[in-house]
Each structure stands twice: as C-alpha cells, then as structure tokens.
Length: 143
Image 1: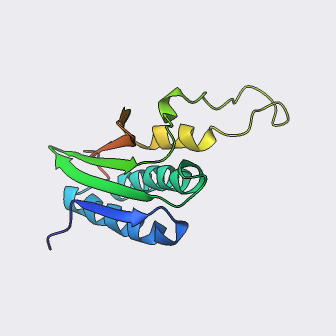
Image 2: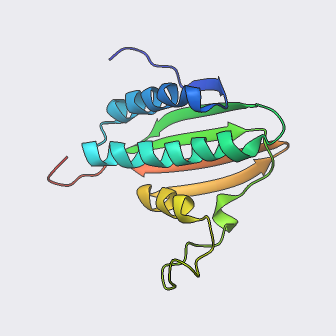
C-alpha cells in the first residue's frame, strides 16, 4: 500500500470534509477495518469535524489537524483545533425518555459519535482541544 501521511492540516471549513473523509478512509483500509467499522469511524470523525467548523471558531476560521496511527489492532484518530474550549465528554447526554417537545436541543450528535467508536478521550493542551477517537479492528465473522 502506498505511504499515506500520518496527519493532515486543513482550514476548518465544510469545503474540506471530503479531504477529511479520504484521509480517514485510507487509514481505515490500512488497519483493515471492516466495512461497518469504517463507516462508524467516518461518521464519528465527521461529527467531530463538522462541530469544529460550526462552533470552535465563532469569529474567524481556524485550522484543524487530524493525526492518525495504528496501535495493534486499533485505529487512533486525534483531532486538534485551537478553537474555544469544548469537552464533548462533559456535554449532557441526549435525552430519550422525554417527548420531542420537552427535549433540549443538541447532544444527539455527540451521543452518536461516542457510540460509533470504542473509545473517546478529550484533553485541553495549552490553547488546543485534542479529541481522540479509537476504533478497534473487529474480529467478527463478517470482517
């Protein structure tokens, strides 16, 4: 397989979503994720990236760097931005026990992101948000 870069830095813009998806797709293939696992990590990264483009830089357009590496049978994606501090792990969980009219807006995308991957970590390093998404290579019969 061709050598693929271990990181990509882009302007935080929806125009670059295809580049983000291609980057993650290449790494999904490199680690040998199943088709479903690849879809899961793509959706999780897309949710995080879109949230950064919409909310991290309210007064300007910033940059996003996505790092990727393989650790044993896991694909590890780190997404770094210098936007406003935001820890998705502290966000209130989506409410499913109330009617649609009573539910608070927001939280469903973060809920889905957390459920599509096997691990989510967040840290604030200096002026950067660093979100880590981990997807294990499944060993099921459909792999």
